[in-house]
Amino acid sequence: MIQVSHLTKLYGPRAAISDLSFEVKKGEIVGFLGPNGAGKSTTMKILTGFMPASEGSAKIAGYDVFENPIEVKRNIGFLPENPPVYPEMKVQDYLQFAAELHQVPREKVRAAVDQVLAKTSLGDVRKRLIGNLSKGYRQRVGLAQAMVHNPAVLILDEPTVGLDPKQIIEIRELIKGLGGEHTVILSSHILPEVTATCERIIVINKGRIVAEDTLDQLTARIKRGLIYSMLVKNPAQEGVSAIRNIPGVQTVTQVGPKLVVEIQPGSPEVRDQIVETAVKREMGVLEFSTEKVSLEEIFLQLTTIETPNETAGVAV
Amino acid sequence: MNFKNAWIISKKDFRTYFTSPIAYIVIAGFMLIMGWMFFYTLSHFEMQSMQYQQYNMGKGPSITDAIIRPLYGNMNVIFLFLVPFITMRLFAEEKKLHTFELLMTSPVTLTEIVLGKFLSSLLLISIMLGITIVYPIILFVGGNPDLGPIVTSYIGTLLLASCYLSLGIFFSSLTENQIVAGSLTFASALFFWLVNWASQASGPTWGEVLNYLSLISHFNNFSQGLLNSSDVIYYLSFIGLGLFLTHRVLDSYRWR
Image (cartoon, rainbow over all chains, first blue to last red; front, side, top):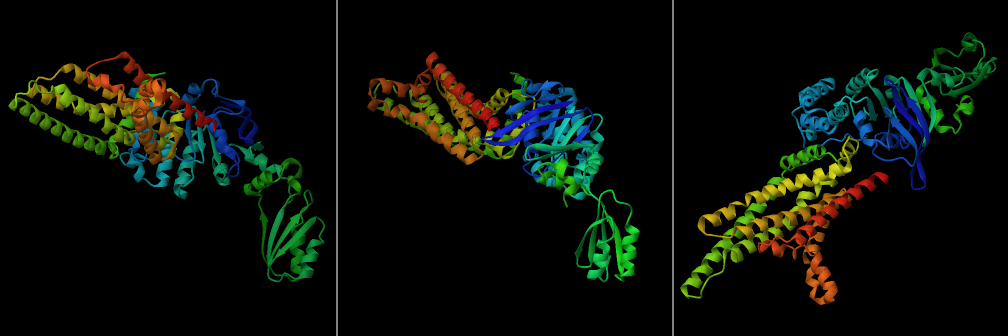
């Protein structure tokens, strides 16, 4: 549905994105993840035909973004970073305008507006001025605008920014429900956002793709040993060094009463031994737990290290 | 170029004039000043005609010379002041609110967007002009004015005001700041209005050029009931150039 190949955008001498290539299949929900200024918005603006690329090409629904911009624009719904709403318009008038602008046939405009109002649960505020609505509602109106003409491809730039937790969950559910029928690309710098909604993740940093995979695969890529964290009453030095000497233990870091034990990748089960040693040395074990690899960590590794594939395991 | 798309945009912008106070303020101000001017020229004309009769000075001034010409001449000046308020928000506001992105990512061309904006402001101007038809009606009820100069004055005023509009839309496309757009519109419209003042001092060739460039020098024929194709062409090309430059500016906005 979306094919991007060797896309490059230069702002003067600075490249906002360079040599970006990826593909999105029909019905997929893909997350575009990256720190602020990574080039997410730029990519989206190019995909939506708002700005041309310096090099490379992008195709949406079989149409080239540069050669057939009108056809492409007919097939996409776009929610930019700032919801493009007119404060002096009423919600339903605005959505009607958006529908007409996207060439929804006149007799179907009303039904399309009603439908999208129900989908985004904006029915209660349909007659209110957008300018009087809270930020969360405005964001939803922006999302409704992107969906009103039932486009094949939805491009959402940080769709849940400025929403309260309840609204965030609602919007995520809504986006999840769009998969299958619609192809969705959404960008975010918030990780749980992407984990909650997307099937596939494209991590982008400094204008380049640093990883592109499903969440499970990304987690597996971080070849890092297990980490246990331990809370003790008496973190005596001898006890700490005894644990350090257990075969398989790579490092032990002590922060106050907390010990962080890192295990060498591929070593056998050592949890028994660690606890045993601690009990023997009368350290007074209060807590023992496994630390999970969070997406934050994957993300940080991928975006802070130049060549993530080779060095990811060594980090931490 | 699909006229329907341009119409969708102009419909939206035309409505916005009336959901904000702009349209009401501009129309009310316009009617107030025009009403006062009509009253003044009419009573002045009445007094003059009476004096001519009293002292047997022959035929008094015609309605065309004493009322129509000053009335529509002044109307042009008022438009010069009011048009910046009408056009300043058209693109500046869209950019500031980021709604320009909505227009640019919708299946409409830039030409349709620019034309839609122009049409919405033209519609407002036409309504303002439409209300002033009441003055010639009063003149027809009480007297016997020439129809010709009235009709050509309306055509000329509409064209001249459209020149201001296209100038205003151009400046609105340059900035996000409405005040800047409005000020630049006013200043440059005034410049094109007064540019022929320097014609006498500029030698024969340049004098003619400046005279040709001046917006007001082309209006004289209209106010005398003459529909001169060269004047119409001048106004139309002025409007066309303004809109074309707007198109270029907005297109370059995408490349930055």
